[in-house]
Structures are given as C-alpha cells and as structure tokens.
Length: 120
Ligand SMILES: [Zn+2]
Image 1 (cartoon, protein in one colour):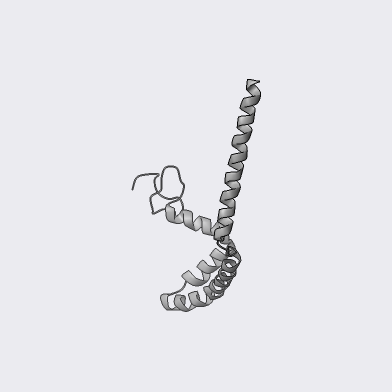
Image 2 (cartoon, rainbow, N blue to C red):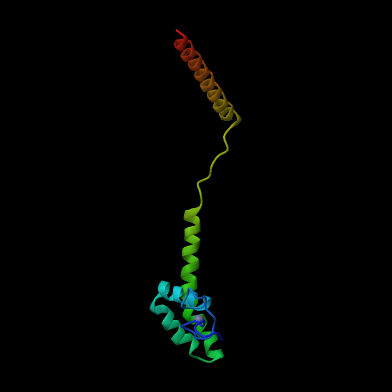
C-alpha cells in the first residue's frame, strides 16, 4: 500500500491522485446522491442480516421498486416510440426531383440575365 493512495471512504481500494474515492465508492456516492436516505435504509435493513434473511428481505425490500421501475419503463417506451413515417410514393419523389430541376433551371436563367446586364 502506497501512503495516501487509498480511498478515503473504504480505506482499502486504491484511488487515483485526482480523486478522494475509489471507483466503487464513487459509484456508491453517486447512488447516495440519487437515492438519498433510501440507500441507508436498504443497507440497514438488507445488508445487516445473515445470508438467508437477506435473500427474503431483498425480495421484499426491492420488489416494489423493481415493479415500479419496470412499469414506468414500459410506459416510457410506448411514449418514446417515433410516429410511423410513411414511405413517399414514387410520384412524390419524382415531383421533388422535378421541382429541384425547375429551380436549377430558373437559377441558371437568372445567372445568364445577370451576366448580360453586366455586359451592358
Ligand atoms: Zn473506496
């Protein structure tokens, strides 16, 4: 262990010189920032028990949250779907091409006229 290069939080994992915490603790901190007191509750209720107790508690503890998340995700997915876009018909495409060619024609005629005017 190099002095001063260990995470200030877990005091075990190495950290970079630019960070106070290791990667794991940084993620944990982010989770705490996002979830607030809920993290402490889960740690208290779930992790401070033996393995068997944990499994049943984990199920109860996060069951509702997982369900809520799944439900809202499904709703969001439906809302986020882009509207159906119909493929343009052959005629429409040809119409656009004609319109473009027409514009090009007008533009070149204008250019010709400007050239003539300059010569006068
Ligand atoms: Zn750490």
